[in-house]
Length: 285
Image (cartoon, rainbow, N blue to C red; front, side):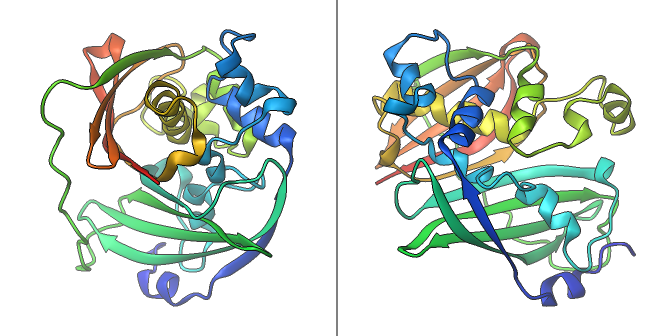
């Protein structure tokens, strides 16, 4: 079996040095749709170096290396076809504000492998810190189709109850036709997001938007709409990817304030509000 759960779990952590600059931050922000309108003061805090603030979801691309969903595939015990891989979910915890420029140490390992029957679910945890202490922790959940069924633990199945009542805010965010091409310059070159032939081999009619691009666009909408642009109010951010997004579509983002957090649901407007992000929570500091 290409996936060996015991080997993956027994493998030692992988440590790398990462670095980023203000240009990396600006490119990421542009990749998730910042800068429209270009002269809007609210957008300039994401695009102009003299006013630059770092949206916490930048942590998913900081350093320009492969994101967790790709890094997990190069860990010991994991030898699978990229076309069979789906990003199932993402969690981010911020320990202190991310600086505009920095150097840090990144330590990653697979912390769980679950048997979902028709698929395996890997959990890739990455902890990042610098000389002043921890900066952030991420967890990527990676589904590998066709690699389940060995009789392993199915893992937790509990999900939060959906928020009740009318949302406190609803916004729509159009996605550029070239959004995936721009976003991939921040470090995710998966051909699923650019190559039509690869996308068809993976079962899609055309290239799809990166899940982490939708993830970043959603957090930016929450920060801009309910937090007055105060990026440092975000303490943690988690979601489950439930459907694909295609470049050129429009996202509908619903937000509910609940007990020190913001619950979010995201759908594709042009496909009868098909869900694309679920179980999404932004925890506030």
